[in-house]
Length: 297
Image (cartoon, rainbow, N blue to C red):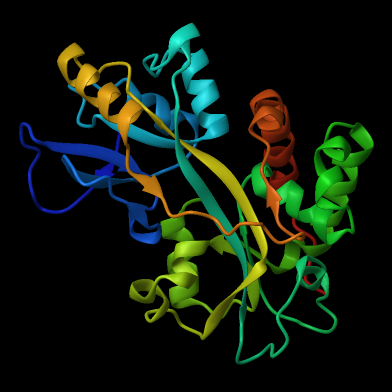
């Protein structure tokens, strides 16, 4: 798979413009730090293979890359990123990714909650979900009545994992999967999904919301949020690395702040849990997804 970066038509230039890669840059709001000049590029694709190819590219087209905290921990352990802090730590906090529960307000007049996603008898229609175990297994347990504070104790047991996959299997015929913010946007732009989970910027940003196929709304009581982290690619030359590290340690651009306090039905995705379990649960998720899909009732 080739490394893919999408940006404006402006070619890469020398200083003082910096090129930093963000997943779904059209769908998130950055808080600028004033200087220097940043050009945020869209990191197309998803998964560790894509991250490895981009962080080890030569010549290196970017100075920094935004990852979720689990991806950052794995990329650091595999030497795809350069150390930023003492003791070899590679990441600098960049705010939080937010994924929100959304619904078509023309067909569902009462704002949904996690359990509503599974109520296909009362609310028939397609659901949009992230295609991967992270976010999706948490969502299944939340919908099954597990309190947010007990999600990871459940997912740390075989019984809890089995419970999450059983719950997902109930809804699988109704799910449309997305793997990136761009895919989620195109699903909502072109199809009539009733509800689901999506990056918050797709619903909250006027630039994208006004182009969607239906009058989708976000349920701000139900948010899955996870730490975002800046990293420096391993193949970035020393001078650029030093400049980027200085920016990261001083005043880097960040994602928009999350509400405080967070609603009780929301959940912070655990980076420590996924750094340990992402490979094992990823393999099980892929095997589950490869099974023949049951027919829609």
